[in-house]
Length: 350
Image 1: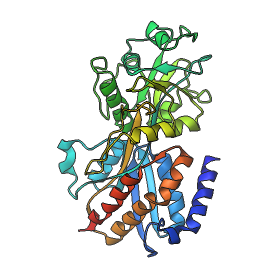
Image 2: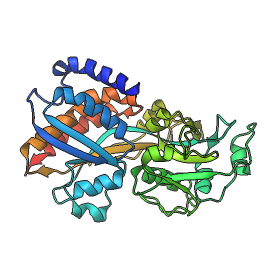
Image 3: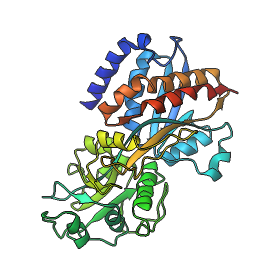
Image 4: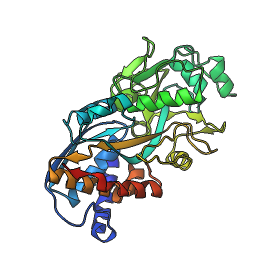
């Protein structure tokens, strides 16, 4: 159903694309192949944009394999793919691997949810210190006093908690753990990054859909008492139950696109187009609002690849932004879009 809505909206947008400069170019038809991999957090948005963009530039064959942010960064550095998706930044010590340069292209943003399966509990509030202790296995029962104190009047069962984490290098893991490091300093004591030294008795899922499966009653791996960090799009697609999270202002905020946009409004864009909306200020900001980027090289040997990338990115910063909410992502602030468009000139043929 969601796919049909996206395609219908994309078709409507394309009818007026040439007149509103959202078609990803000046009308030149381009022939090229753009293979991508990486972030599963942004995958639903990428797939929607690729579907719509294909009608504008049928000669550009675009693929996106997912695999996680770590895989995407590795594939781009090795020139295995022409582009990648990532929710985490390249480490300074790894920049030398990108021999053709590196450019960040912000695309959309969205919440990371704390999704859970707990019969009889539909409205749960959690804060960063409590979440840190849950995932560090210091809190093991749902009726723990720390959880009860955040949820007065809620009957919490003595069910065992099963934390579910990402298996492999993941930008979703980076942003979840960096939020914990920022919002629960001194409580969260594990490694914050694409991978984390989680306790041995947590459950692991491949990609956001793999983590979501543990909280999805329709899946065979589903576990009563499970809790995991899942991107908003996959959580909604699986009809998961989502916790509200206490933000920096002390307000319990449910994950939503509006709350993600409120976090973006408190965030500024760096010169290299990176930004960090985690633990943003503001009463209405969702605290685990996550950035995501397409990353590319600066130079390519194939001029048609450069033209194709520019056309695709131009489309993302036009009609693609209008598609974002239909696949459960928050579009970028207008000043972010303008700055990203101004960077297009940096994409060049070697």
